[in-house]
Length: 636
Ligand SMILES: Nc1ncnc2c1ncn2[C@@H]1O[C@H](COP(=O)(O)OP(=O)(O)OP(=O)(O)O)[C@@H](O)[C@H]1O
Ligand SMILES: [Mg+2]
Image (cartoon, rainbow, N blue to C red; front, side):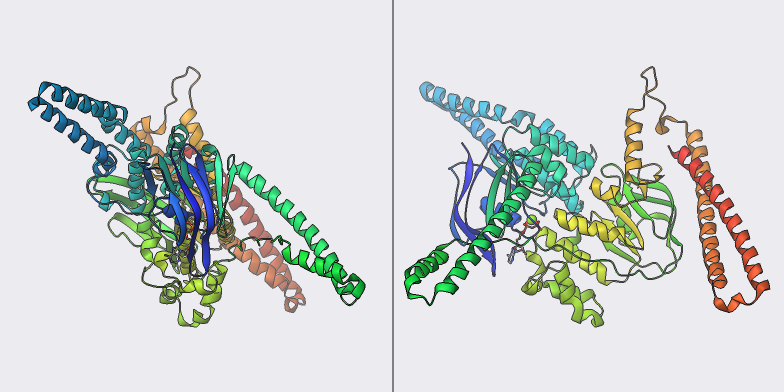
């Protein structure tokens, strides 16, 4: 039986205990979630289990020959093509095959009896190779890589040109293909989109051996694990059952502990009152002494305070025009491979837009283009007047200088008049006291994310470009970020694989596609529903209904032209509504100004003006509703 065991293991960074004389047995067949808030030490624990980090004290024990596979939270792959990198998982089997070959060659020239022995050995190895999947490796590798989102073409791309997220997918594929006895995965879902996420979920469910997995995705954990290990304040606790069961037990336990603490406090108060009262009386002296001793011996119940949570709001946004973004005929290609094209896109102030689409369709690429980091595209892209963007990139750790401390990193970007407030600001983002002196290189995933968020916050901006902003954040921090974004007055463009996050934030969706991208009005749920319908629509006879891609080119062109026309009309109507509302507001101000009360004629004029404006507003509103409906129908 395979396992890894911690025996009284301690580890601290500065004055922060990550493990305190901890014991743990991680059995290979268990499907385990490792959970805890950001910075509690999950990644550190995995490194200790994997033997990559030596603890300060105690032992890490594993039976001889146990193979441990560990995928760090962030890592870069070495080189070669995607396929080659994944194939390295089979390096040890390749050696074995060479060994078998060698034995067979030796047998050919050996004495008959010796030859038989050699051949038997060689045969044994070949059988082992067969069972280990050596002869099916081409298929297995391809299946795994495809499951994680690679296509026939991208299988043979060089890994070094891939984004950090895609490199992680290659590293994940390699670990999975190695099929180790103990599989340790640190937040593997961070870089996966919905499809790849589902593939991994199924893979882990089917895996005969267990694994130990860090993730902040509740739904994912509930599907795949049967035990939960929690790390908090240097202590490890093991719970059997899935994640929801763990959460429920945790809540019950907390209530029980609070009860016990209250009872103990009452008892302590009683004993102390007795001691105070009879301390001076000789007759009670021995009773008092024994109670004092008892109190000293008593193990006090301590309530661990709930980990403090992030608290912040985005500052008021600088003023900008109504039209935030105008894009015409935008096209992006990598060499000859088109990524997306025909993107005509207008975004108005205050929109909360999700950018979505299947694997590799170029969501992050579009974000980089929007952020001005990728000038290689054709077509036009114009930001509106007064627009100031702030960008949260998916590979945000590359934006942090590993040599700098947290505070220095922030000082690089902050205006000098903000310096006195930086420590407070970092405190609100859960970098208390000395933590601001940490080098950014040692920060945990969640800490790096939060530091990048603070950096965004200190730049004045009215457009946020967020590429997977919830990555690495624990559940509580995710909720706080969501709340802050919901009340953000500026415009938001977001790419995220977190369905919960999207459905509570966005009011429109841009669905990228290699040919023509599509805009969808309404929130994420509407979009998700439409997506589902698109997959399942069948005509009564069972034959699939003609879908957009099967419409003739002319029809598609006609439709697109009509859609563009309606879109322009809608935008114009919205602008008109905006103007009418401003005029109505001015009119109301004039009518409620006491100075004007005396002038009857003037007031009548205002009143007439008001009626006119209201009529116009109602008409425009009706026209806008009709246009929006027509547009909606066309898109559906
Ligand atoms: N080499 C180091 N020196 C000093 N502090 C460190 C070092 N490595 C990690 N830490 C700190 O130890 C704490 C635990 O880090 P770890 O990466 O294990 O957290 P985590 O639970 O994985 O968090 P997350 O959910 O954010 O990934 C963090 O506060 C981190 O900054
Ligand atoms: Mg971590």
